[in-house]
Amino acid sequence: MKRLGILTGGGDAPGLNAVIRAVSRVSQANGVELLGFKNGYNGLIHGDYMHLTMPHISGLLTKGGTILGTNNRDNPFNFPVQESGKIVYRDMSDKAIENLEKLNIGCLIVVGGDGSLAIARELSEKGAKTITVPKTIDNDILETDQTFGFDTAVNTATEALDKLHTTAESHHRVMVLELMGRYAGWITLYSGVAGGADVILIPEIPWKIEKVAEKILNRKRNGKYFSIVVVSEGVKTPEGDYVIRQTIKESGDPLRLGGISHVISKMIEDTTGIESRATVLGHLQRGGSPSPFDRVLATRYGVAAAKLALDGEHGKMVSLKNGVITSVPFEKIPSGCRVVPTDHQLICAAREMGISFGD
Ligand code: F6P
Image 1 (cartoon, protein in one colour):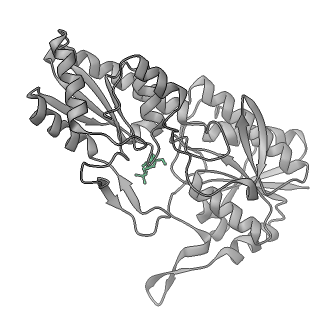
Image 2: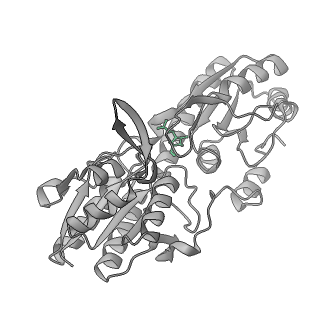
């Protein structure tokens, strides 16, 4: 094999550059060229790529984002093209495969979340050789214990909680922090425990305002005049609806969640009579330098993906299982997202600590 390809798709996550660096190093050590497609699948369709050599990868380990660029819209199977002055959506997957063949790419490594990974799998079903690397701050990919990016996001969220604590205490307020994670509560659960939250609300556990208020008022009775509530963006309103920040028609999952913390904050104020403020942490969770854990995980994933590709294997996702890096064939990965089991050990430990889940 003379060449490998790599692209980063979906929302960015800390550690993408560390994967690119690892794949590049292993490729170079084996005398194999690495081409990086720009801006996710867009670069693959348009043949827009760069040669990833030493000068490009130097200094990448600590850098957030992705030097290749990314997007969470473009899908080769439903790709926007200009026709008679209008944008229409066409199946361009043949073009993607043709470009891989034209460029003599033995295997394409796709680093992405569920959307990008599903596309890589579809391309593989059409004959392309692909290997995937699970990335997302949400930690919601099935068949791996952890995605890279998650640990850094938890660190960022925990730091935010530490800061909210001081203002909550000074003003005798309830501070509600809203975190990303889509339909899974991993970031909220882990940072909630790490940041000493009093109430943790995640999509997996239905909540009631009476229970949240009870916890806050109990604390007040015990002389704690402030409380910290942490809530996932994917938590539903009492009416059973998501709070939608934006809808992006052409995206695989068009819904962009955001704003539930404002609803909950108002309800807390109305029910307890205690002043409450909401903060939406938003995209800060995706930014910045990867944590040491994510640098290590991304490097391990990158090395494993490159080695699989160099060994001529494909149709697999690299994965972390019980601390060991392994790989899972695409056909063994069920569709859907990995949510927090409601009997997860950390939920049980948090309950023992007196943390309320609003149920
Ligand atoms: O999947 C990562 C993620 O940050 C989610 O936690 C969040 O819901 C979504 O992406 C935000 O997407 P966008 O960057 O398009 O606003």
